[in-house]
Image (cartoon, rainbow, N blue to C red; front, side):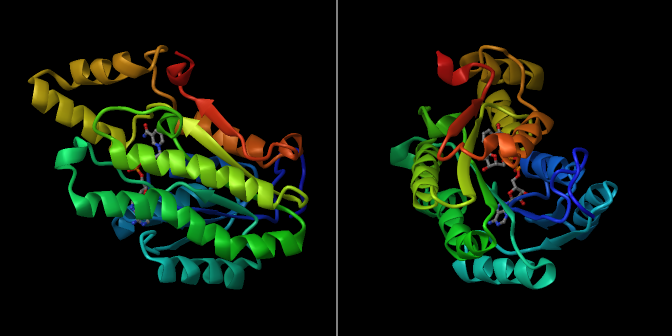
Length: 266
Ligand code: NAD
């Protein structure tokens, strides 16, 4: 397939980490709609993963899954090698896998801190350090790091997450600068609340803690932070990712793009 207006990413291969659910699956779907072959990554039962592959392949592209654990550098290296062997290159790399844990610093479990820093931050260092050289050799590449509104501002109880997301915004800038004279761009997307399993757990925890209904907990979570009082959707984030892969974004380098219902404009 050659590239066209309808399929601008035809012939390219995208790897989206943490794409068996939520935002990652939304970005993978949008990239497939734009014509890219997809390597999905993330946990989940085999039937759910097969369903995600089938959903992606409906767009006439090839999709496979690699189950690398993003907290393990050797597995990340093996995944990048797998993509290059299967498809020839990683043209679009989306660092999206992430987890959350909410507790104040003095009660924050050390193992949760280590896991959040590894999965939400260090994994992007490992994917980039292995994938960037070949992107540069090819003369074109796109890295999109899924940060968060929490990459720009803090919130009580989210020390590890906020540290990791501020870290990935900084890492994005350095990677963009190191590749500024190449065809490889590196940018971050900073979403506000998106209704995915990661956020549903926080809603459930608020409902239990405050003894309120799930609806009231959802309104409370949004009302505290997101002026629009609407969730951002994975589809909207997917469209932004496709734009970042377009020619129009050739000179966007090191940006941290808010898509957050106004959260960080307050
Ligand atoms: P989600 O829980 O729906 O999806 C997380 C994905 O990461 C899943 O595919 C999961 O299997 C995968 N994953 C988790 N641990 C992994 C590991 N060790 N190795 C490989 N894969 C792993 O969450 P989501 O809300 O879609 O979050 C995706 C990204 O978006 C995260 O980086 C998150 O911080 C960020 N984000 C989410 C929101 C939100 O409101 N949901 C807002 C801003 C940023």
